[in-house]
Length: 398
Image: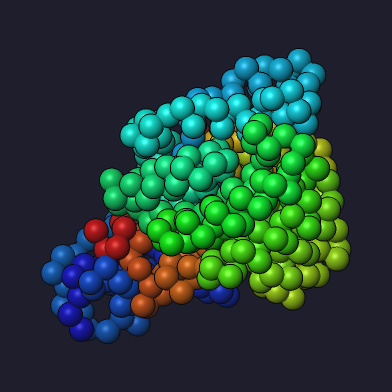
């Protein structure tokens, strides 16, 4: 079999369901796609243009950060200070801080400004082996600013070797010009923003914030209906601060994921299990906001709901640009196992983006997106804090 590149003398974690670690493994790629990944002794005869000796290093799929707010202007360091002094997230939001604070800075920034400020954040993630990233809008809260954010996110994928998946999050917060009129703003999201964004092909999915300081389930239902009328899959920030039944609502619409989930109940777990909706846990926000109400990990496990992890990189509640540290936080705060953490940033993260047939595991036919690590055992990727053990990152075979 002819191939472009073979990576040999490697240990493999393929992340295929049920697959065991491989001590003497090999990955072969042609045209940017994997043609073989497995035991070297099982490989077909290969004629490779290039052969890479991995010298016993560990190869995993490239990591996937499947929930970020990477595009924004400004920062919210002062709000961090206020929270340390006793203010709550809700109090800050109702006083004009929170998402609306970032909205003002983002509206004032140019598209070039947004790209320039996001690139260092993206580069930090790529340096940890990330090969795919989801980036949400939601700090514009008006059509032109939301379009600007989504265009900036798309540009990042042209400037760096990484797969960028974009999500429209217009229903993120109520902009000041619609104070006291959430229904009027949802009219604009559904009637103007979603059709325009879909027409330009700028979003791969639609998200919302279902919460007392966000939008009601009935309002989110309207957003989902508009999204699906334009052929866009949905996902939802749900059950972060309270239980409004958002996860069950999202699952009822076949959502790719329901995210945060600290206050998820059994009915929500069951609905997600039935729909195949991924539980996207965001330990960075849990840690940064000093939350104490844990997501129902045992119930999610018992129901077989796939669990994914992400940085939730954002200026207000999770200014985190390390997916490796997010894994450590998930293990430490949520007591996820090493295997669950690794699946959470590979195969299950791909599921949360609807990309499980394209990336997230080392299998023939999938994109050849690899992370090659200088570690003795996989647990080191979760155990170490602040380490950068990446030896090399391969994206689409390069």
